[in-house]
Amino acid sequence: MRAALAALAAAFSLALANGDGVAVLLVGADKRPGYDERMSTLHFTAMRDDVVVPLGADVFVLSDACPSDDGLRTLANLAKSYFGTALAGVGAVAAARPSADCAVFPPGTNTKPWIQWYRLEKCWALMEAHEARRGATYDVVVKLRSDATPRPWPARADALAAAAA
Image (cartoon, rainbow, N blue to C red; front, side, top):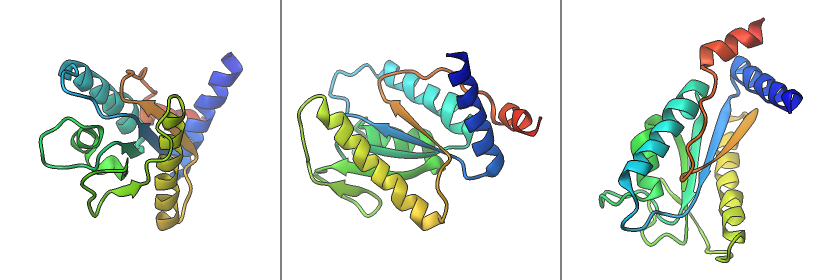
């Protein structure tokens, strides 16, 4: 276990030192009415402050709907609100309101547990399209869930110092 953690830390350090960077893939279902707004605030704040910002990551999101100005706390709207310019790609599965900045994919499978993997596959496609546009691949890809709070990652400066040592 320690060797695996050391290898993971080395990969993050190398990715940050090389500048090819880190991608975060966030997939999930949109939260329904009654979803505890305090929990979404906790999860998205932790993802932003403990993962995205320290790693300088680009974020790719795939959920049920494209971002909109309807005030709903959909996964895409929350990602747009919390991640700002780090949000590099957004997609939706059979979105009702597609937009110019949101890729729409056919529904695919809708059975558990396969829907999660279908969404991950489509989110990965968003990341690959972005890699092709920027002419570089990501060194590290992190998959996050919207309903789980991540543990803090090492600060970018600490990872760079570790890579230089």
